[in-house]
Length: 376
Image (cartoon, rainbow, N blue to C red; front, side, top):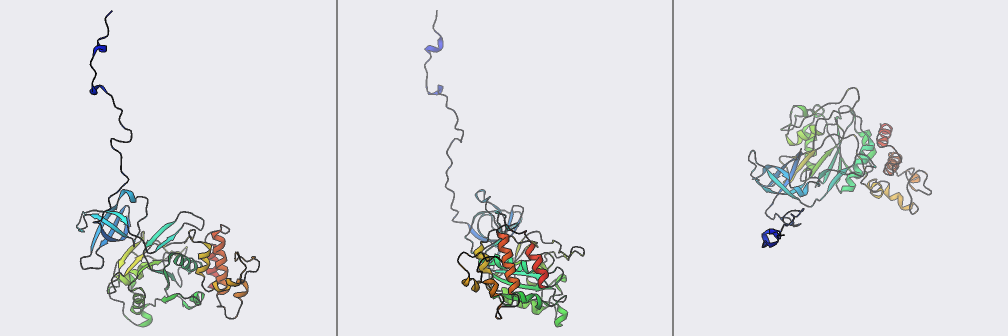
């Protein structure tokens, strides 16, 4: 019997079978490029995965660049107002594309949630230092609850709030503004052109002719040198104001005659330069919102946003929840004092509704409807 011929074969290294590494032929490194050569740009618009950015925003060589985001940033929100590091083609020429590789540290973040118990936060804008709450005196009816929510969101973000009343030809805004008269909040009302007999401001388009030049100049003075975000319900005239201030052509719309609510015209937030102002002056127009969830705002910050009521809490017992049935809560006695503002009882009710909503005890939006009817 002969021995198998393979037994007499001479083996060498070519006969060794190595199983391929399932994780790849070479290990991946966790180190990423630092992109020290990245150019700093400001995001002014976001649209379906494309980011419109401005490079050299404070020089004569300002360019608009379209970007995509790097893979490592896919889980991080990039919003108008953000300053980002950009690599690639930043010439701004047609059909060119750059890449966002990092988000610079943000000075402020304005956020909202779907409701007061939704844990998911949505970043609206970044690096804004002015929040302009835009409300109409009529059509749609202003809501004090929306004002309180806006002031709480601004306080949480560290942004200075401004209240702007539009459509003053329909109703005198003085009655509504008594609600915030005791607060250290700047207010401005836009008069129609006919009220002052003046001509529209330069660059104002056809849909903005009702706003007087004096109103536009007042707003310019308040917003000059700042990054300002306009926030408010649909139909109050945010885009009309932005068009008047910047000379842009953002779409505008009216109010539904049946529901009394504004029609959505702006579909995304966009930052626009305000001409003839200091460098770094931007106005950010946002889509109309019907609710401003504050799930990310703590109860302490909610209370701090009611600056007219905070001093009274010094007399409250430790751990006071500031509810209507909280033992020894000093707020009830405070709002009845002669030195308290006429709107103090309403503001206390609003605070308690916001605190209850943050605890999931009331239905979202109830505070806005109830107090809006009470003040008007």
